[in-house]
Image 1: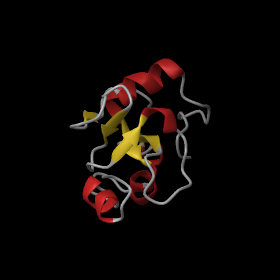
Image 2: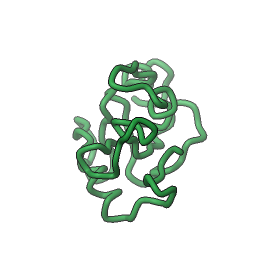
Image 3: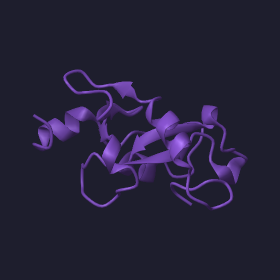
Length: 112
């Protein structure tokens, strides 16, 4: 159940913003618009919930400890992840591998 609360509902905008602010600032970008996820992949604030283009800056809210393993909706258990990183992480916990980084995005011409 990607990008949903433990009850299967959409995250409230206030919480989406707080999760967004957990992402690291990306050098050379306005931190209100673009940041970096845990893997270093660039994510764009306006692309929340957009999970359709390869190596895009779309992002989702991930439960660090998956709901299926007892994870909750508290801010400490939520992180912003570029959508492909979230898809690759799936239910893996506590160990998982990143799929997309800024390096991959640059190599493929998505980031200058």
